Image 1 (tube, helix red, strand yellow):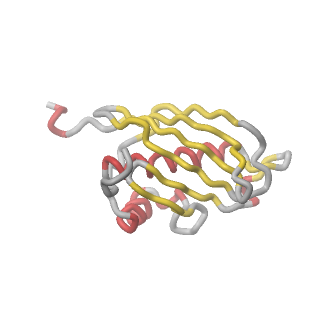
Image 2: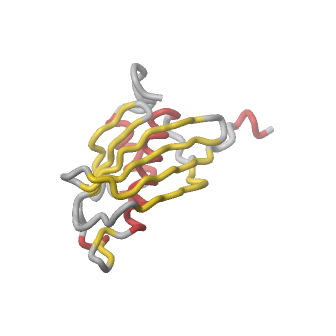
Length: 150
């Protein structure tokens, strides 16, 4: 999925698309930062936000799942282009250890992008020590192309 081919959307086009189609994701207000981006891969950083803390204290599971899901969408769109109706159909998460009170990064890659389904793998790391706190497998359903609806 990655390598020599450029992404379907360059970095600026991706950020513009995200701002237009999913403004609540957090890229516009720096709750999420697109740190690395290429075809089929991305690294999204979630700076520490006290609003995401659960008792423990640690960054909450829902915040970690949201980071993984958004990262999966970005990595997928880097392969298939601007398809806003590509939606999560399955998300499996394994929490490996508490995230603590730290910035998190999600490294995500497209494993397979088919006609109707795409599967991405994501690892969430605690920064700056790069300790893995979660692993996600995310499947997206892709909309049926207009030509196939007849």
